[in-house]
Image 1 (cartoon, rainbow, N blue to C red):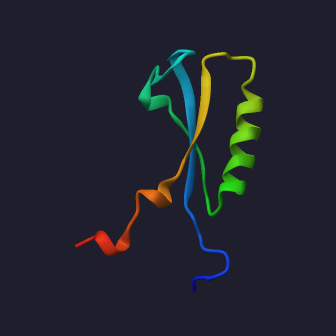
Image 2: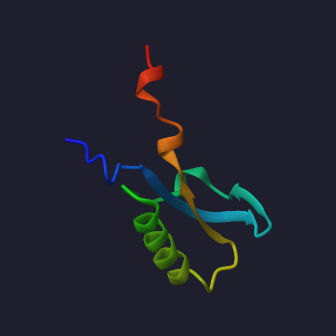
Length: 78
């Protein structure tokens, strides 16, 4: 059952090694890491921060928060 006061907003956290630190192009798509799916931005940000800090020694590693809820519109599916 949906909570109208705190709607679930799906966020995905992914990351991996970039070809170059200044470009958002993964070196190897088969190695992209799925950190997790989260119901709020705050939860996703905490996971992103923890994973990014764990890989701080590798300048080529980048992690991203994807706002998946903006890509999903059940009313638009036919």
